[in-house]
Length: 153
Image 1 (cartoon, rainbow, N blue to C red):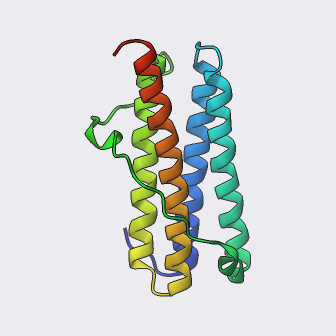
Image 2 (image 1 turned 135 degrees about the vertical axis):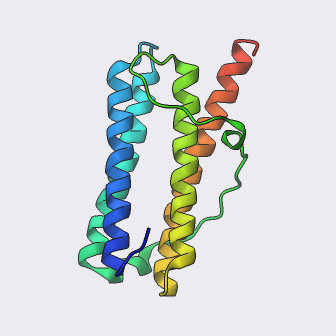
């Protein structure tokens, strides 16, 4: 992928956040496990928040300066999972695996965008977004591990 401007990069990131939010919203509507709908809707709201931040950034590039980078340790659970396609009838374990993998990809996307950013403040901003996605990934991996422990897997 080749971007001609920072606006192209931001629009691409907005599109990815919309895609992620729509995934979590659709999954929340189809999941049968009690409580899982709430978790999925929370993740959809987080992705919508990222979408809004990016839209604000597109109109005011100075907003980048207000964001702080926070290092998140990657526990790498999803690194060992195979790629999956979403199906409306997925069970909880499959859905968690898919969500972890999606968050892993999003984090890697933003890390890549940070590396290719020409302006240091844009690189820092994309690193913040990468860390946000990594935070989601780690939360999902922890929930997955807890669920598997409860079910002796």
